[in-house]
Amino acid sequence: MSWIHHYKLFLFDLDGLLVNTEEIHYQAYKKALRKHGMLLDWDFKKYCSFAHYTSEGVKERVFVEFPQLKKSEEAWNEVYADKKAAMISFLQEEPLHIMPGADHFLTLLQEAGAACCVVTHSPLELVTIIRKKHPILDTIPFWMTRENYRQPKPDPECYLKAIQTYSKPGDPVIGFEDTPRGIEALLKTSADPVLISQLAYPEIPSFTQRGVLHFPSFDHILDMLQKA
Image (cartoon, rainbow, N blue to C red; front, side, top):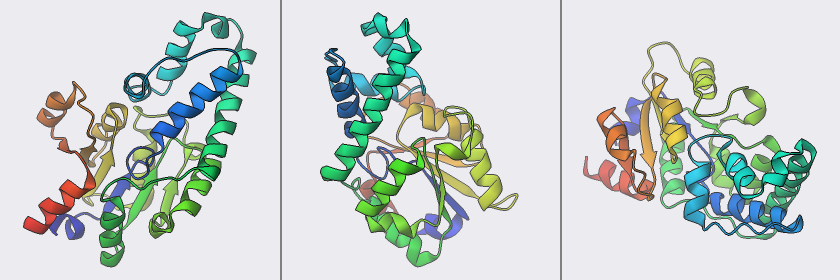
């Protein structure tokens, strides 16, 4: 269990890493666009190829599919507001699953008294609903939501702020992400980056060459720690 006791701060993304909310975001976009008479025919994999690289990726590709939205900022704002409303509705009414092994890993960190912080693009309103669904998330003492920083990932601002706030200079820090843009943000910090994803991102070989560890799930990390 060397990781548990070596690192002084554990950083976590939220959506798609600790909780399976990425598909809910995807369905919320589809529902919002459908409300405005636009059929989004992407599958989930295609959605991820846009959402997981830049903060504006989905918006930019939606504009390609539906150029009428690009002509009116008000029209896009209405769609995005409906997307947020759909997201809240889904979170309140539908089951929300913890990602495989995440609950066990967080339990080990809690038992060890490890300092942990979630650094997420999601706003506090959504995070509050998610945390009520899964009390295991309340074992994480520190939370940095979208309201707490200016530049979204892959800009490292959010992670740099978390490291500065919740660790001391020179402390070993580790960060966990499930997307390329999250990993790019971590790589610009002092944290050791870990990618947790079953998606075959083409960047994975280059990430590993840059020192990123890659695991399909937290279950695989737990297996490694038990064998260490």
